[in-house]
Image 1 (cartoon, rainbow, N blue to C red):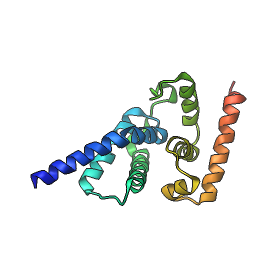
Image 2 (cartoon, rainbow, N blue to C red):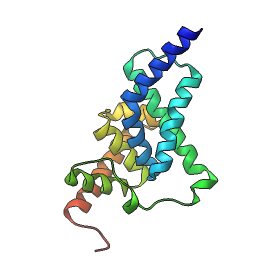
Image 3 (spheres, rainbow, N blue to C red):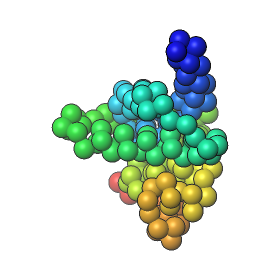
Length: 164
């Protein structure tokens, strides 16, 4: 029993090391609040430990963790505590390069349906079909949302902001 628990803890430690950055970035994409995103990150790995989940392969593992992260983010956003939030300018973005930081901050200004597809497509390298499965959407819807998100980003990056 004790050896089994140690193996389980080692496995969870490996998952945390492998996926914690991805979970935090995805949660930050949804919630736009670093402390809530950190809470979601912690909750995801606690859930993995509690469920004692086994996976078919690393892709199944990653997809399941992404799905659990998205659901945890939706729970936080529905909660009564989510009445207050941190503005986009107050977020410390986990990006070192200044140019990339500007792109990430513009992505975070997008509506959630566009932020999520952009994040999964460009940052997690999922195909539109895989994103559709993860988000329980039609693949044509995902492609349309990706196209519209790119158009918005292009306008904001090249044409400036509407309020300027």
